[in-house]
Image (cartoon, rainbow, N blue to C red; front, side, top):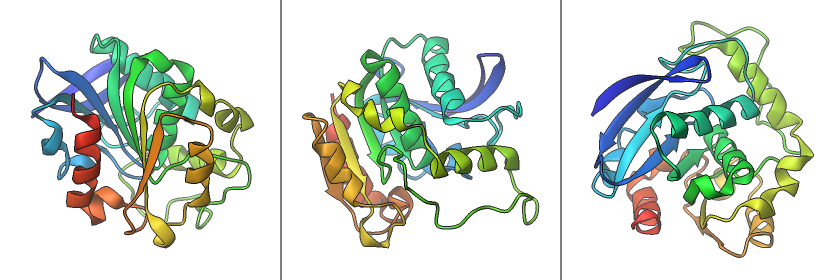
Length: 229
């Protein structure tokens, strides 16, 4: 495993890279408040079949904190990262915030995504709510830019309607992993996405929102075959 600080759109993203350099890239996009380390337990399962890239998104982990944060900025960062590594297309796994970023990438440039796994993260839809509204100031020292958390949380509460309307633009096969009734995410949205995407499927792993953390073996058992070349 190597750590790289890659220039992307005027900032530097810190990326952990592992796996087979000759294989298709696989991007692992973390959740709000997390960083690239969240994937350490499951990333080795993809190392033989993929060249695995786990970035810290802007404002998180060891990446730059430019002060400007949104799902759109992160979408463009991912597209810029693909350009930086010379990848015409890639597989992608996104969890929560990272799932939304992945949806937006797949909507904006469908040909760049070969296969998509979203972990308990249907596209944001008007009326969704966070389990709790974050305070204006962090409760203590946090390992990320609190302004990034506030900006993303505000967009979750009031998403652009186009993000849902553009779901049919996604052409990649999609596997949606649903966390079940213990998740705060409205689980009915997965079936609504299925009605809009003919090449999508959903699998419930009923451990709540953090599937790859709470049930890594089940996560790998679902995602690895789906992403196998």
